[in-house]
Length: 159
Image (cartoon, rainbow, N blue to C red; front, side, top):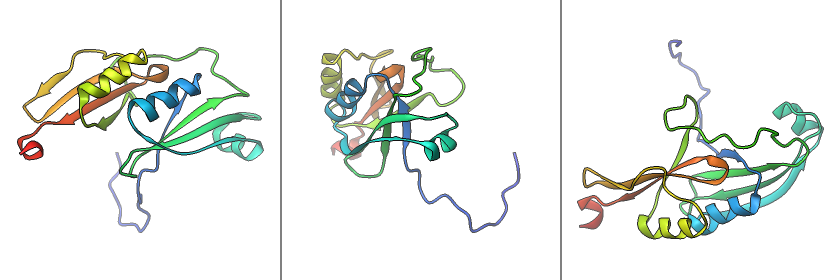
């Protein structure tokens, strides 16, 4: 690890997290209907410039951006049409190195879980009360991505 230096180059914000999916319709249902995110836009992207950026020859992809209702966080859903992953999704364990899960604070965790279970998604473990501050759980979302859901049940939130 290097020692930080004084610089004017700083991150302004995190823009989005990207998730590659095979079933775009299922992924949209999960994030839009199941979690209540908002559709930002949809496009077909590809071509030489995109290929140079992502390091794939002649890519073509369907891309959907969704965002949280507060407008601060976005997810980019990508279905690669020209160069799909031949190995398929790899559902990592919670202790796998690297990017493992994305987390959302929700209202009515049990209601959200009921909606997602109706779509065929379920928790990895159990829903737990963490120190009377949060209800939380992990579930397996589209293409095996781990999604953490938490509901603020703190006395300050409900007082």
